[in-house]
Image (cartoon, rainbow, N blue to C red; front, side):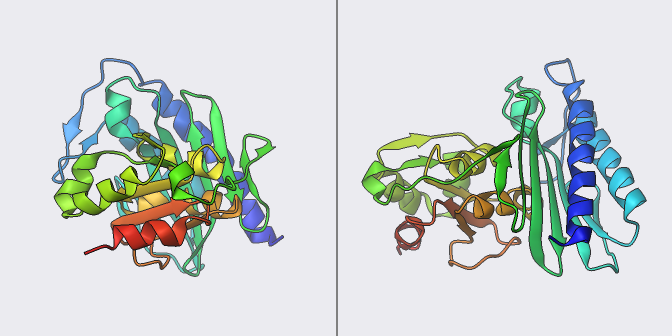
Length: 257
């Protein structure tokens, strides 16, 4: 195992825990919500957690790049880049729903090599380092072996995103071919696929910080995660995570004209 990867991974695990605990102090409280230009919510919990992560990670690795949802991008020279979402699921956070997480992704020369998804309110950590497997806390996880859409469980965030993107018909066509559909949105559907609790997580309207902390977890669990064109692309707004066995079938439906 690459020692630099392992070192950063271990530092990130602690940093994610600290940032998540900071956010948890504000959860289910009377907290002020501001609305950004894209109509997404932000709170002092988001801002404070990201600042903690930025200070910790760049303090330890000052030549690394950084991309955070709240503070934007800072270039680096080391070949590494941190990709951060301090609270993925802020809409749930502000409504008192415990399904939210602190996401930390680590990229090296364009490849996301480590991902951490810490759920403070649920006291769980999903994590993965390239070549080391995927884990929920200390338990190794793996995708399911279901190979028929008719037997599949599919997750998504909100039909609104598909409607805005003009692909509602394709989305509904996919849902109708599966046995169960669950609106476990944001990060949660992805980690549910990774641990074998469902076969597909389909999404539209994502950003790099929504995916960086998740890609290694899905892939190290044996799954597959791409944009709807079938290629890995952290900057595209569309994404499909699967157990691998149903990936091509789902993409074919999503790309129906």
